[in-house]
Image (tube, rainbow, N blue to C red):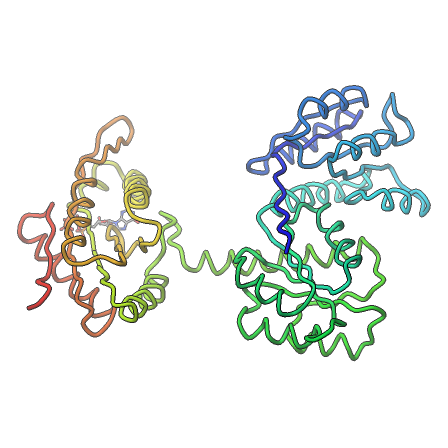
Length: 427
Ligand SMILES: Nc1nc2c(ncn2[C@@H]2O[C@H](COP(=O)(O)OP(=O)(O)OP(=O)(O)O)[C@@H](O)[C@H]2O)c(=O)[nH]1
């Protein structure tokens, strides 16, 4: 069904007459990569910025008491311009809090408490990142779906919706970026427990999280949803603040798991994939190539006389060269290729859908590009070259291909370096 991709900008507006609070917020939020901060001290200044830069704003952090707007007038005005609002207060009673939440603000924060200032920064960061995260709302009730989507929109999530289990599964199949599913229990056909079970057959907890929902659900139901594979459960009716905390915590958890997985697969110096990832992903690529009858090349490349680079420019200089080479390898290979750091100054490229001829062309291109790469360390040009070993015959698998490529690479070294050695395709 409808895809709702939010195209908000990258600017945050802080409206706060206390210079120290405004400065602190601007400094802390300005550290979030990609975010720029605009500061206003009065409603009048805020108006000018919002009217001039409405499309650039993704959120406004607003003080309730401004010199020209002492009773929170800035909040409804900024919201009327379509900009989500987080409110800074110096303390609220229950009625004031309810009034603000009913208006549809994102959250409110007591600015006199330093730890809450950190909460503002975390919330801004969360909302800024949410533009890349899709949430699927599954509920057969149009009004319930619309309400949940309105809440999620405040936090900047990208939204997908489905009114039954079958279309939810189809949406997941279609949209790889869905990281959270909100799933009602009571739906005709497939109920929440059944749908969650089906989702978990295909998508692990490190791929997406699921929050089950029900009207006045019992403890028994929440246990069933959790056992079926939900990460969390929300009972309706709920407090909006609880809803946001649960949704955001689940999204944070999945981001953490994914970043841990990503780090485990990367070489810290160059950011390229590491040997561990190469072994797993390369094996899968080789199996897929065999199934589809396509060719695959394994290219091992070792920089020549790299020891002398370290000797001349020091270890940090050598590291800089390795980073530059890595960046360049990524630029000149296809995004479907695996580019990995295989060892110290050794790199591996696994390229799919190539025959022997194309593999040789690619390896020659890599060699020529490294020889032509302009690297300057402390103002001195570093000249580089590389030796490469290339295999395309699958043999008994990836390990075997790597061993053969390594042998060829050392043949290239002993034959004078700066050259490509390739196995005959049909020996
Ligand atoms: N700066 C830096 N150097 C590294 C790193 N990993 C390995 N090296 C260096 O790479 C050099 C590799 O040296 P050798 O194996 O003798 O090979 P080479 O000097 O490149 O000579 P050939 O391979 O025979 O052309 C050593 O000096 C290692 O210290 C790293 O992460 N950073």
